[in-house]
Length: 308
Image 1 (cartoon, rainbow, N blue to C red):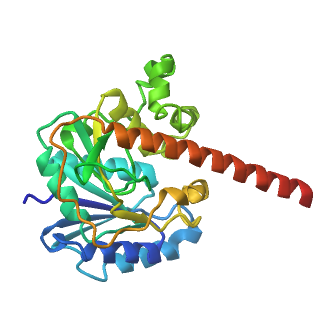
Image 2: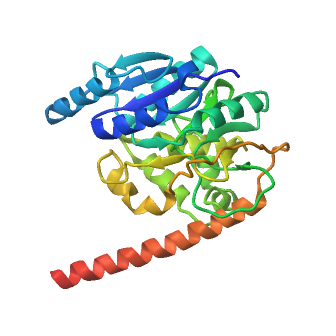
Image 3: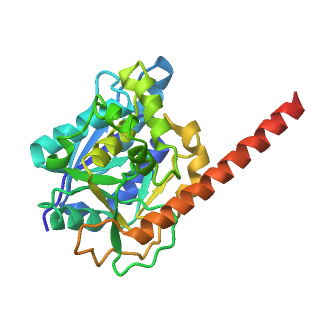
């Protein structure tokens, strides 16, 4: 089975990096894979020691069959580093598996990614593979299914898809003026993805624009599909406030189910169509999550007001 190159992005979290790389090394197929570790340079003086520790972790073991370490000399920032690294490997190899330093992987993560990349390599409608799945119970005939949205927690793509990556969000205006499209972009109005896109559009600093919402915009406007496993093969251990977007994501722990250690994707969908059952179940899950989030914000606001 053809193995895709693996892009691993890290910065200043040595403990997270170690756990993530250890889980990668335990994967079926790791010994036959080529790994590219992109180590960003410190942005501030106080980050130098933690960046140094990360680079020591990265160099401490042969995590995959071949390991290439790219130590940035200047700070790219998380989003620019990912865009640059994915572009580089897609251009050179035609495909890539993408992992960040706060992800712990199932031992079957690589097997699923490589099989999926090979099965759907010639189907232009399939634009990405997701290793993460939200904690939604769905009964499907296969172990994986298609949805029209992307995730950033362990994913893969091909050059044929990534070449459409809309860095400048040129199709934002097309989406903005079409209420039905916005409704669908928000997963039938269940999640504020378009608000995230608006915030990104208003951001004046290119390095601070999240790469993942731009990738979702790209796939959505191209009418692309993303393959999801029915159970998550990824656990995010970075929702502790330690990362760049940690304080934003800390309320998303519910999205982050434990890995089913023995779960392996065996069966794949034959037709490239959205799984309606999974889509509507996800929309209901998002609605409930939004209600819980608003309730939590109200409780915290009341407590803060009383304390003052």
